[in-house]
Image 1 (cartoon, chains in turn brown, red):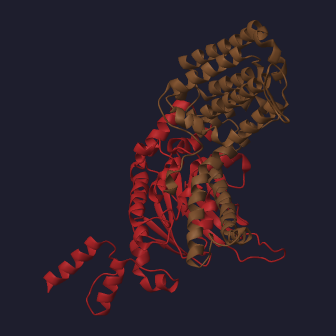
Image 2: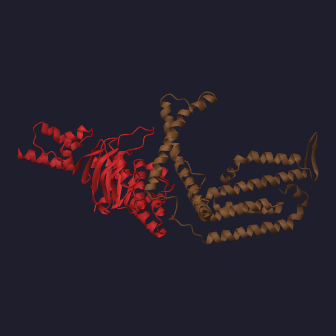
Image 3: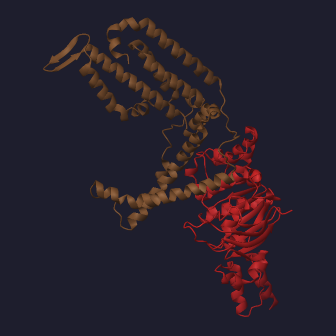
Length: 280
Length: 283
């Protein structure tokens, strides 16, 4: 069971989106996020929603899975919406009971904000759903490679990320083993109050920490034996290459930017009244 | 010229406490390993055999004496990469040697560090994985493999750098019998088919018997050096340092004690059977 865990949130599939270069995906997602923030009316934002829907459709990832990614931020969306409804006064008064006053401007702003946050999260999770951690770190490594000239060594950071991902399953297995070993000696991880349970974890974490340090030492030796010297003059077997897909994506990035800007300009007046309330 | 040459090497680990000197892990050790040899190094825990592996490619530097890899002194830092490329080391725990999250990317790690062309890396990775019989697993995550499979991936990662010598430090100690057999077969192929010098550190007698030459370490020193037949002929000496002799030796020894005239250097089961058969027919 424990061996079946997925690394990150990657859903391996064969689709246009999966086969895109990770660098292009990063560019696409970053510019999309900027565009969502720049959208100042419902039509621009609606366009962003359409783009998201299109990306989900061609990625072949089930909608249910995508929406699951929104679960952790439901609370944030709810709080933002409530605050918008409570404090935004504009448009027609819809409800006015005792001290609660709900206006159309407030409701529209709440919907707008909720949609904006959801789009940001959905598009970012699409990135991790369709890109394996290895190719993501590979992409980051390549994007930040030029920064080495000004003294920022991103290679070390991406190497750390790769090793961390590599060792997550190993450490989970180890936790499982230590837990069994401690349980067979009478340790109890499930009962008692929170302090008691936290205390019970000490005999779990000390051996885990000790073993991890030893692992790190052995891994360092193995890496030295394989001529690792901090990534100087390193080549890559699976060199990243732009394909026709990435040029299509590049065109789409330009298209999205242009569309949002044009929609902002031409439809901005359409809802001028509450637009003022919602521009961040 | 020898591929690895230890010349009166002494090495001691640093103590955690200041002013306390530890006993040397390797004491006045001299050994010359020739190209193409298959050498097994035997010794019980703490005899200094793992330290030898780390001394042989410059991971550790000797306190006294020197270690020469293909004529290069391991003390010279400018030869460091060359030395590590010539002598690859595979360690005991396969989990702690695998760097990447995909098998083929891990095998590519060494050649990538050496700055080799991508097409050439691809060729090396494929041929290394085929040599150890792990080609069909090239796209798998290492955490889904068995211990023996992981160890073979680790070996492939070293072969991909095309070293002329591979040192394996108890590579089978953490494996089940099937994993151990698969790893052993892969190692024999390296020596026989690719002509790579193999130094195999172990405490399993049955594995040591497969080598051309056995070096026995005891108490940080070299105790015996010879062919398997020469080394195991002296069963009492092997036992005196806390090691066992192979089962065939044990059996022929017991039979000899009972007055049956068998030779004392019978290592394979076939040889033993042949000898007993000849004796029976002779009677």
